[in-house]
Amino acid sequence: MKLLVTKSQKGDTRSFEQLVTMYQDKIFALSYQLTGNYADAQDLAQNVFIKAYRALPGFRNEADFGTWLHRITVNLSINEKRKKKPEVYLDSPVQTGEGEMPRMVASDIESPEEAFEKKEFSSMVHAALWKLSEEHRAVLVLREMQGYSYEEIAQMLDCTLGTVKSRISRARHSLKMQLSQVACNGRKKQA
Image (cartoon, rainbow, N blue to C red; front, side, top):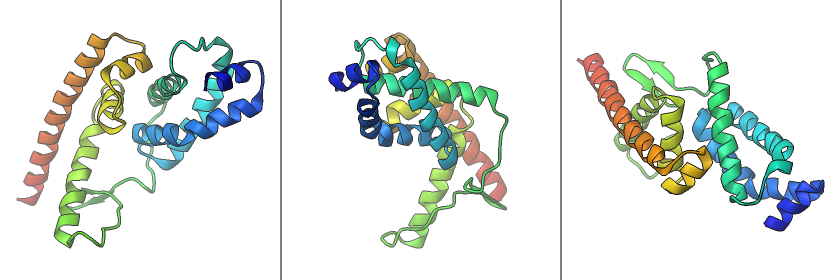
């Protein structure tokens, strides 16, 4: 790995292509979880590798290359969200009289009731997650969905371990509050 990075820093594009191949799935998965949209995730992942290629001469090989890419991904995502105005996408959840429903196909294994409850809960979590700040959403995605340790997240976000723990704690609290609010609104609509 370090050899590929070193060769890439010296201008070997094939070595960089190998690095892209090694990390593209992980970066796309993180991009999708941060953007919630396939097209935006593709754009973000592509921008991550462009930025990484341009910044490669400054990479000191002290940190893990994958961690460095994840850090670029999170930072680009946050920066792009700040610049963008909200947009409507065809793959966004459907608004119904009973609330928001994600566009998902039910599993053959689950009963229709289980599938509906799962979709409803997933929709509630998704709605609550998108009401959080970018920083809170990013740490929750990295910790809970991507499974990174607190130390790895601190490295990616270039902040202290205490800051990461504090952000995750606040993010979890905010998510619980948002879920309660979404659930209460859902019950009011049903009544």
